[in-house]
Length: 45
Image (cartoon, rainbow, N blue to C red):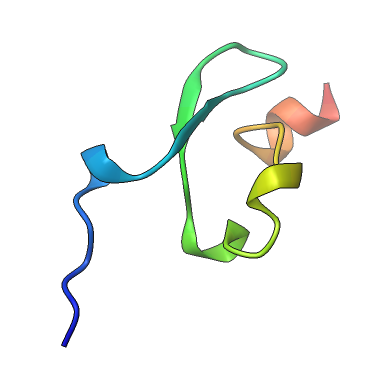
């Protein structure tokens, strides 16, 4: 069985609104190239 990668080893991006770094999430697996914002709150601004 494969091990889960450590959080430090996951890809990161910088939020287009607040400028904070955020890491890859399982729910973004198929659309990671399209993700620009760290949260719905930042997307709404």
